[in-house]
Image (cartoon, rainbow, N blue to C red; front, side, top):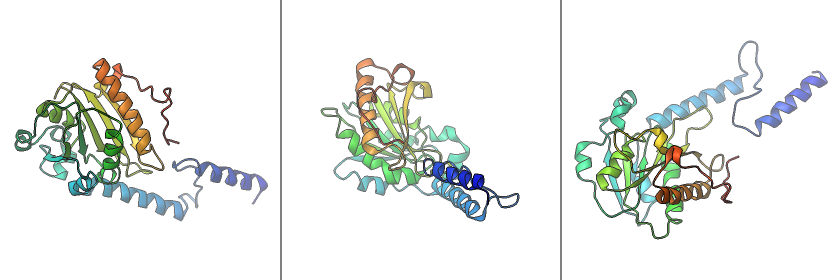
Length: 252
């Protein structure tokens, strides 16, 4: 092997230590080397498992000991329908909507399975705890645990409960390097069927140690919530300035 090839191999090896992207994998004839091909197949299997694994609200509730929870379902009756009909995942089951509590609350947290139950099982309760610990005198509604849910389901939950602000923690679409990524979506004064993604603020890739830490996510989210309450707006009308305010995270 030439000196140039050795140096190139060492460079790729160093770069791979700094990213989860599949780079510089080499080749065996016209295909990937066996080790990298098997890693790719394993990542694909993990992504499929994340999408199809059932939601276990008991796991979330156990991580929120002492915090009231409410369980709801979307209008999608099963996982296959949920995947084929995104619109049904944005709407509450009528029976569950009728049983949601109402109260004089400032914010409601909705934990939704989304496209990765694994992500919410592993990270959602910790993010709720870390965020609510920073909210001081905020009046926090019971945490809503939502099955077969999309982000916009939170709009209908907030409207039904009479809450002006909703935070949806949801399993993000798995990639080939991350099957357990949690997203947080903040919306002020949501209007079901009218509010769009431009009206929301999103924190993505919450999954320590390789993504955003719980404390980092909580700091950013609590800061956004405070500014949203003061300005009466989220989305394009609200900029995340937490890094400039000295709030740091572990996103590398």
